Image (cartoon, rainbow, N blue to C red; front, side, top):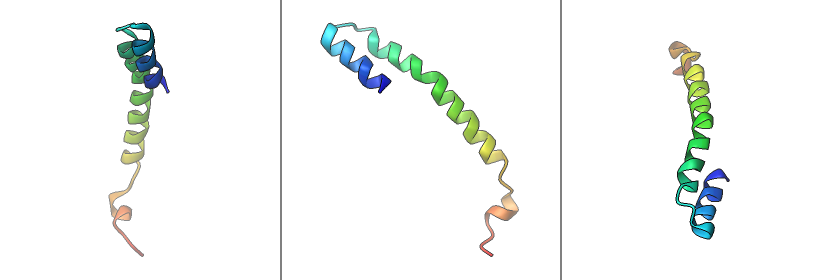
Length: 53
């Protein structure tokens, strides 16, 4: 939604800086998701991950 808002403001009002600003607003969310994914990946036991039984 943030990206669409940035693109919309760029097209509608000609604010060239709105789209890059929207991209910067997404950075904390992406970083948080990356940290959470890394924590989840480190918590998996490789011996248990491959077993089917």
